[in-house]
Image (cartoon, rainbow, N blue to C red):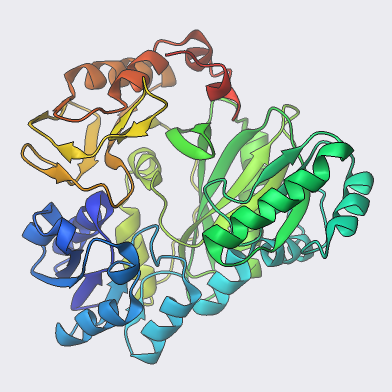
Length: 444
């Protein structure tokens, strides 16, 4: 087992990893930018190293700075959390070269699943259902036209190196294709330094359902059931729950089997997530694989009563998985609490938290890095906490979440708490009748 782990991240996920390391008797190193010098990870880690200014490119995305911090503190492993360098093939490889264990996927696994066009080809070969689309990247506009004619409109253009909705365009008819082609490639090039684009059939009224998987160094893989992430805005998830109200035992078996095939196809090591779109007929299609811990891993932990970060660390240290597939017996919901103004198009609201009171009680969990007096920097993601509840049934979980949200006080900045309060009383949400288009008609 590792003696010291450097946490190459910030915020609530850095705190989350530090807590598990302490429970495992492993020393921790926090790295931080000057904007995060007063953060809880810096306070609670055994050691802390400043790695640069607030700009991510010069701190949390600087591979040389992070490797240097690991070497001067004699860390024998690095946990990247999510975001930043967590799915960076080069970072995983550099860790290998320096004899530091990267607690995540191997470079070749990240390469296989990180490029979406390559990932899709891999999944087709593995027999995992995929959305009809182009074979690899589109060569030019004419190639896009021919594929759209074959697939039939509506189609969607996607950046191969994309994420968060960048470089993505829905095209409903042929005359709109050229404009969408130009803007998708331009946005992809600016966001990722790669303007490669591929095309898929656009699935109308889909659910976004993902399967948590785990794989070890010996070729074994299992799934830990599903999470429904359909409540999202501009491709950013807002609320996640497990089990999905749309799920059936038969669909869970099929999707779980497909997710295990996906993991085994790349000899996946660690915990990861296979994401699917599921249409109204419960036909499902592979979307992508995230080769890291997910923001919403918490709800899976609550329904299976197991620490997934601990599992990550154990798998990275060479332990075997149990091989057991899980079916959730409880119901868990997570609300992402962001420093954003939901009454003003979710505009970010950085600033100083003047008063803070978190909810508690049976079945209520808060993952956060903030406190009264903490100043939220404007440089990073606006999520300040995750509020998670677990109960016997979905109905009880919704009522518990309503109660917990009513207790949650964050003053000094705007937050998404009022949005979540309204959502928990929405008839369609309560009935489980929603798709990824839910937020397009939701009125706060």
